[in-house]
Image 1 (tube, rainbow, N blue to C red):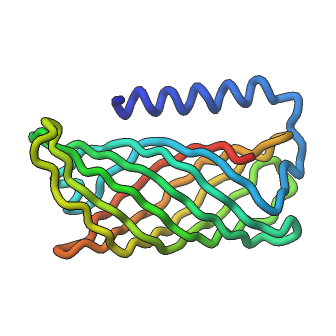
Image 2: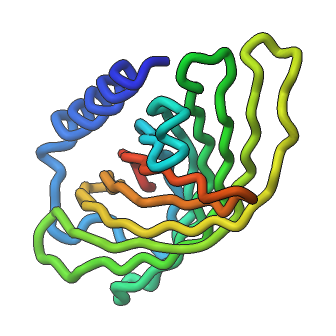
Length: 185
């Protein structure tokens, strides 16, 4: 799936959810102790990684933990990224599993900004598109930091965020910038 098609699909889903739930907006939104969600969007390749790979896409799931009265929460994210190599018939498959701390700024509005960051494990692998010469998968330390906006709706929340992700590979860091939209229940 092309980046433009994925971005268009994410925007269409977000727009449809807003239209169908516009009458159900409420200031406090959903505040559960445990939440789960899904997320997707484009992944921009940065630095040396961006020199050799095009922008790609990602999707994943999350599990959140937060006391309803606290601005600080804990979030586990699992995401799958794919970026095609420039001028070659292979792509980089990256699986990230991270444990994150999230700080949500107090807001009386249905929109609340937040900061997020954490550490985890990145599994990277070069995959031959012809299927006959895949590289060896490597597990490496990863960290991330970023921010976003939550839209608090009746029954669920939506979010849009971006995070700088860095995976410490042997030669250098594999740096990427996923731009994510998601739904949390």
